[in-house]
Length: 131
View 1 (cartoon, rainbow, N blue to C red):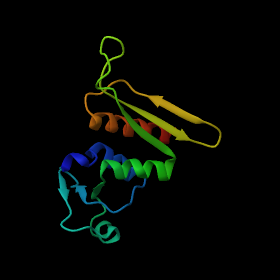
View 2 (view 1 turned 180 degrees about the vertical axis):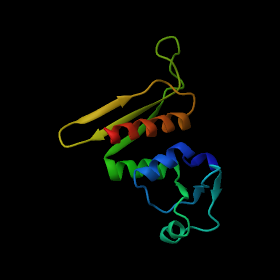
View 3 (view 1 turned 135 degrees about the vertical axis):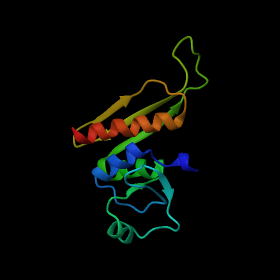
View 4 (view 1 turned 60 degrees about the horizontal axis):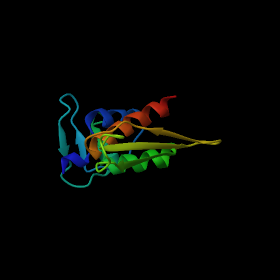
């Protein structure tokens, strides 16, 4: 189940960007160790008790937050059955950034797993937010 949560690197960046939704997991400050909350947390209580806790959302929760807060839509395409001689094989991500004037699209190289594709897409999205 832990593999459904974002990595420490992503969780830390989300904290910097103001992510503040309730989560089932967190990273301990100092040792970057992932843990589950014993029960679904009341966010205000957790953060008041220890502001150094780094919330760890589910990967899908992060993707939903990027869309809601920054108009960034991430999708993954499965090309695992594509002929490797012609184009390659694996998973690609696409990022659509909905702005005031146009839609930007970013296409990725192939990744071996959907998890890797999502992680790279999320990190790429952070770069787009900081521009």
